[in-house]
Amino acid sequence: MTHRLWDNGSVTDQPEDPAPETEEESAPAAEPVKPRKVVLLASIAATVVVLDAISKVIVVATVQPNEPVRLLGGLVYLSLIRNPGAAFSMATGMTWVLALIAIGVVIFIIRMAPRLRSTPWAVSLGLVLGGAIGNLIDRIFRAPGFLQGHVVDFVSVFGPNAEYFPVFNVADSAITIGGISLVVTALLGIDFDGTRTGSRKADRA
Image (cartoon, rainbow, N blue to C red; front, side, top):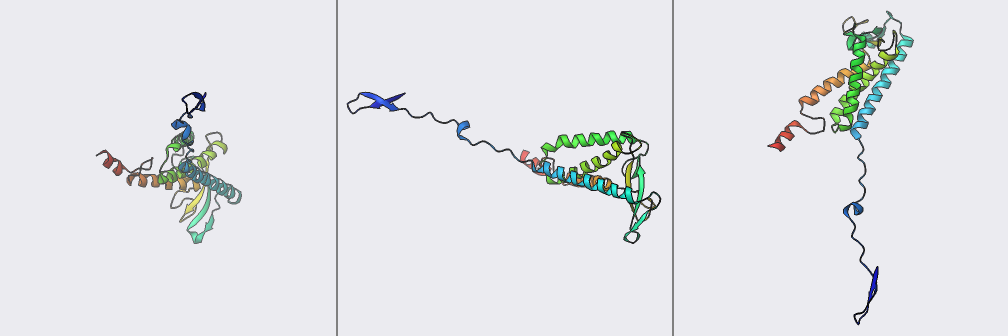
């Protein structure tokens, strides 16, 4: 409704003041925060899975069992081994259990990923996730069957056929490096959300 006000006091039409905007109407819409740590974790995991898969395909196609390939003057040998156990040929009689553990690790990391705020944690968990998926692919798709598949290991250091050290693959390396990195990160007091344990205690004091 409008009212017009004359000099003699009579009332006529004049536009009323517009209603004030509420905070919700005036405030710009908040942009969603890009989950950078999740992207970092996923990128590292995907890289490990791809490198692991490609290296296994190449080794299976070019290296024969019991015919190791000597590299770097004997520092490294490519020795093709089908491993039913865990990393570095441990727990060879528990193939399906190891597969279920790997599935649990993958699910746990994926569920925790959205809460990541720490770069060291993202890198470490990305390595572990990629390694777990890499070996899990073998457990699922390779012989002798589903969740019973033998993992392709092929890196033997200092001597052929695990003469001095267990044979491993790219996924094993990623899991080992990621696990060590997780321990170091925790010892440094860096938490999952990016804060430090010492800083949080100081804030509570």
